[in-house]
Image (cartoon, rainbow, N blue to C red):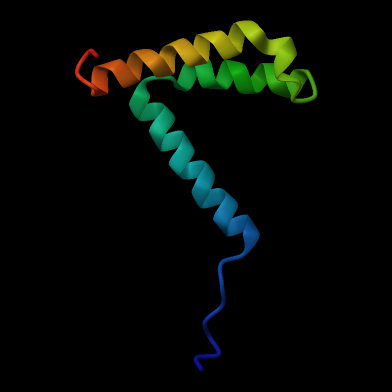
Length: 73
């Protein structure tokens, strides 16, 4: 067995997951609405019920982006 090999740490896995999420959000053109949502959640102890305006804006952005990818369906 190669002793130099080590599994990815939880932190490294989380960082790569975050990078992938950010890439997808950026490609969708929803970075601004996502960061507004994240800011609201951070200010409200991650209670999404207090951030409904931001949740709705992000959902609409995501749906609009998805329609573009699906060819306007």
